[in-house]
Amino acid sequence: MNTAARQQNSDLVWDLEKINQHRRAMSFVKQFENRFCVFSSSVRQLYTNYSIFFPEEAHRQMVILPDPYAFHDTFSHLNPDSVSATGLHVIPGNLIGKQGLYLVISHKDKKVRSVPIPFQEGMRQILRRTNSEDPFLPVLMKGDLREFNDKLPCLHLHRLRLKDLSGLSSLERESIRSVITDKLMELYQQSTTFNAG
Image 1: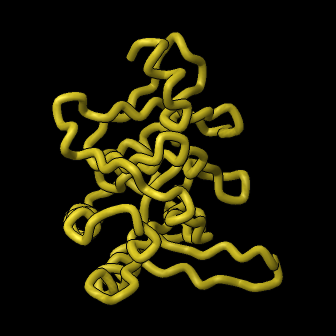
Image 2: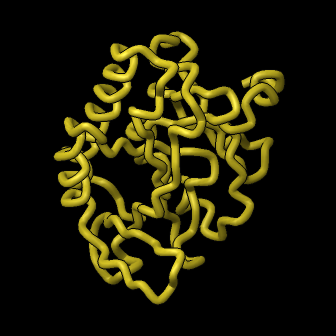
């Protein structure tokens, strides 16, 4: 990836300096490559077809590289306000003494305890809502690869709200829903083979 391209979209270069278990974080996030779409608010684009790289010359950085030959897999002119943080995290089960992956909501109020649910069950609940008026469409943004309780890597999920994409045609909105839903279905079906980190 050339320097000009990097400067053009810093949202696609994630700094992993704050992550202690760097190697573990790298293998954890690679499992989700191309499975969650990535949103860049600075250029207002949603990338549905990309690769994840960890350049050796760039210490502790992760680069999202959209497929240059699949420009039709990039949706443009998305309102940045249509994407919001959810507090929903994908965590490795061994954080809570279990196997596999789990979904957990972290509340701003630390006194509120969230009950982790198995990843597949969480995906099933999300998929049930994909055809509703207000579907839950998870996407990733810069900074979503983190450490949970300063221990193990996790992924925070943002949410794209279709109804806030007023600048897009109904066909474009339907295409976005369809792409994200297809990826979620694939993720749901394959998640039992994932390594929890």
